[in-house]
Length: 425
Image 1: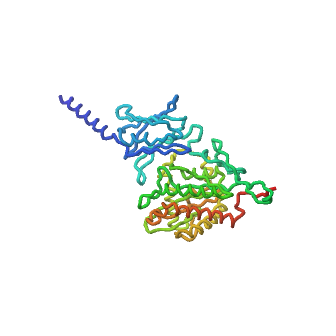
Image 2: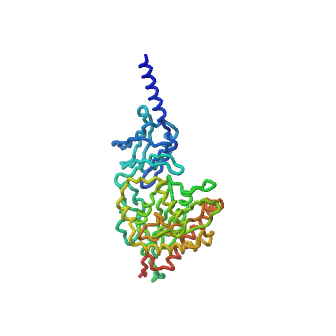
Image 3: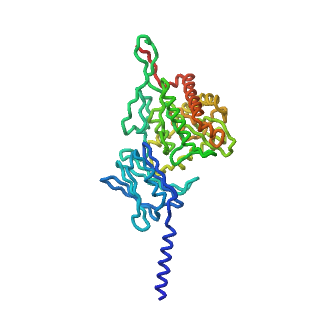
């Protein structure tokens, strides 16, 4: 009798242990982008999983061990958009006791990258599933960015070539007209890479009223592109054009693949004190930061890769080559001049947090051959500035100031002009 009771007791103990290990996901998120689609599954402990791929039709199967059915898993399929470039459908169900199966029906063959992220700030344990096109490297490339028009700039040897032929882009050239003979015309447009800070899993700073930095920076970036495209000799290209995460190093890679002449990184950060206010402009530093605040801000911005969720197991040799900086002094000097011109214009519409261009080790500014600045448009943590950042009219003023700063930079430093001016015959 005793052995039977003992066996029953042990069996109950094992079952109770199994129940204790079961978990429900606390959240699920789906982030489509031109380069890849990301699925994020969040829980209060690491999710054990196994995965495999199937063909005819293409599917990715992920078995989530010890995960119970729940609202977070059910919500995944409702987040899927019809125009997602890689996912056709998402199905979830119990495969066997203690195992939930996630089946991702694919529109095309993919190279999946699946990895875990440790808890950080507002996030718990995250299981990340990145779906890259099978014909592209597993790090996000620049295939979605159009090439430079008419005449390419000096090519950077480390930049990856686009995998897909870019759409045509016509430069603005003065018409042949006897009445305008002898006018100057542009042989190539100035290309400005516009980097909207944060995105996707990384919301950036959050204001007192709930505004998210990633939303404001994208709105400003889109307005900046429109204003630059309206100039006779410029065009803007967005590093990200939607709500998705791009690793900092890949933002540099994309700008170089564009053969960009300038890079503008747009931000609206928070500070520990809500009364902090004003706009700032930053350039890269070869040494230390120009102030304690600049060092603090650079570390905070560089931590975006940890928050947004970068797969640290990916080894991208082209990225490593791009970020090797041996001769960057000239580029930093040009960045300082550009920053000064932009800061002067912004000072006409907003208080300046610092009246000079600051410097720190921002990862997004490390293109060795592209003058690059980071513009902190205002403090989203300041309630008054948060309201202004959400005002379309104020956004237009900010963007106009940045465009005027870019124009002033080229007006006072004509040797930096990438365009070659020729006379009409």
